[in-house]
Length: 307
Ligand code: RIB
Image 1: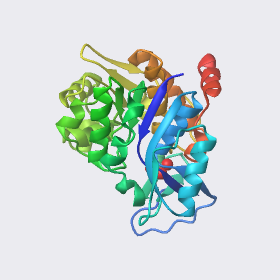
Image 2 (image 1 turned 135 degrees about the horizontal axis):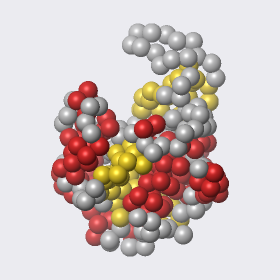
Image 3 (image 1 turned 120 degrees about the horizontal axis):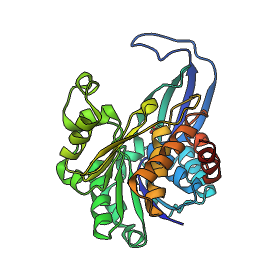
């Protein structure tokens, strides 16, 4: 069983299904509403746990009822919550999510306690890194915290997977501490300082060179329905996407990163791990909600056997 550490955000998601994502100033009459557990970090932690990994989650939530629910949910998933701390002033993170009929979404996050997850909270969990196989992190907590976790992981020989979401620029020092970087096309554009419309016309090889130019040795650029590019110093290989009926793409990227960390932690090579991760992402897109949609190891195995 691979041992995976996740350092990242925990949110409660308020999800409304809508015919289309509202434009600025527009009111849209949606239909169903669900409240579901979310947060990119928590989704990756729950995703990895459902895939059979031994997961330790380092996070920060408020002292409110949502914080209680988050911690209870993670415990019920078998996640080690020893290093989840509670902030006496800030509320648990929440996300307002609109999901359109085609499965696309728009997400607004009120980070709350997530932005009070500090380097010292990661340092407190240092002993756990000596036993871990992989560290996976998104970017919804302070950058110093992400940097500290990457540095500690590196010192212990733990594979570092960085999912640069939400999109932003990153210091070279952090990128050099990463083993596998997993941006989507827009995140790659942001990281490389390229206009979004310019990155759309680039070839797979050019995207590969841009990723390597950031200072990482390996990475995967996720392209949604167009598949993913698996990139190392020698080549860029496109793996096709699995075709599914997308209901809600929320957390599909988190499921991908969870699957990647678990597969890498189990010793798969990057291409095998990317295929496994793609199956996790595809399955997550077939169900509503973030954590409710994350697949189990058995579901992924059955899906891969059929495809
Ligand atoms: O990646 C999806 C997640 O982004 C949601 O669960 C939401 O909470 C935001 O963090």
